[in-house]
Length: 189
Image (cartoon, rainbow, N blue to C red; front, side, top):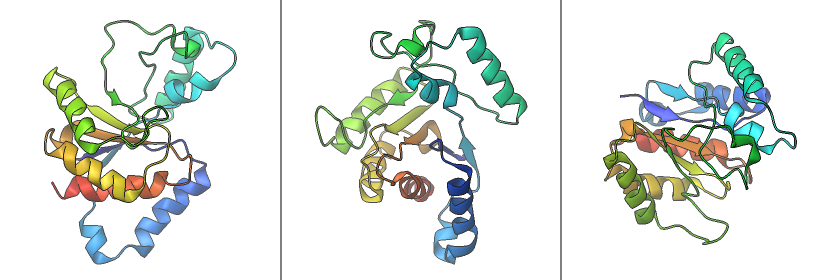
């Protein structure tokens, strides 16, 4: 099964540099430890629009999603199930909505460090409830490659890697190395 991956919304130059580094600077050992296929999910309509100050009407969101699809993006996230009190942009989502996120998997602004075993337990519960894919989000961007590997090691003991994705914010410039660590870890199991 291919690994699943959510890339942060990065400038084109950063994404290009990442791909160039993978193509030219990886050793044979690293190259063999990477999955052959990766699923990339565009999260702009969900993650990007939630920071807008003005409410974006549903028909405009649908138009954006259609344009992204026409541009060749095969998977686009439309919305999320969050309180409209905190994220007004997501107030138009529907309640049958399929859940797929475990947030703050590498650190929480309220609780601090998050134990990998706790992430594994939450992920296992979602998977046992029929969640088709669970995206593990470093939503405050404080993870490191070591903490990413440690968390994934715990989670993959409970849930098949084929049902997992990662979502890494680039708050401290660690998103790309954390994604790389996730790609490596996903191929070891």
